[in-house]
Length: 251
Ligand SMILES: Nc1ncnc2c1ncn2[C@@H]1O[C@H](COP(=O)(O)OP(=O)(O)OP(=O)(O)O)[C@@H](O)[C@H]1O
Image (cartoon, rainbow, N blue to C red; front, side, top):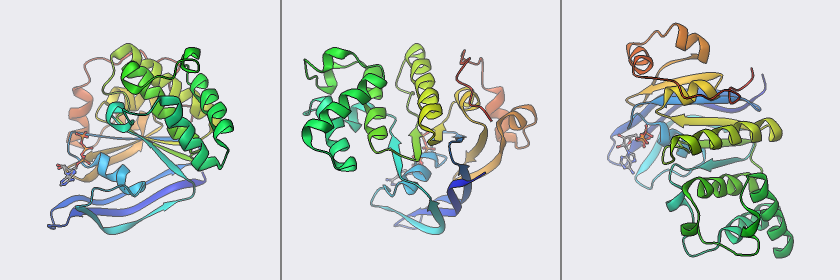
């Protein structure tokens, strides 16, 4: 497996020396999907933010290394706060295309519309430039995915991208991400507290608790034979698995 992202013993703390993430190590291969699961506050988002160098100003890396062999883009949990409310969505995508792909305004807009069409957004966005508040939650999340893809990432970091959506839309977005990954071959790091979603999407899982990885391994091995008490508790707490047939990532 050619590793595209490797984290070695990452430790993060506040500027007041409160330890938040301790000795986190993980690796993801080109075009592969890993999941980071764990309870709220276990350090999943901070780990992703450290990868993309977007840590909050009061949090610093106090140990470890992060090696990225390709460009990273990130999709955040809340599409409302991740989009500019005062800028039409096509322009927001076009600006990223223009900046990252060094294209003219006109070509960037054409490319932005192609990307939005690829993500299943309606044609009338072209005629009627819409603002984020005029889109549904699922449509806004698709716009965020378009913005991330405009960066042509080799690694896509997803921080609970479907938590704010209803179950049907959640399934559509997960299927879309899996389809895009097959077509564009980016590596996916998927953060969630939902073990059912992670196990449907990811071939490898890392379980986090209180800032540490407490268990890791192939998804099927972890589900069949969890070693850590916390992982067992997570598995027991999955009441029922959503129908994600067709989403499951290949080996
Ligand atoms: N800006 C910050 N300043 C101080 N502490 C922070 C800051 N951001 C996060 N933390 C703390 O760091 C820890 C890890 O937070 P993080 O957001 O990574 O958790 P998480 O596992 O992603 O949780 P969730 O699933 O709820 O998003 C938590 O205890 C949180 O309170």
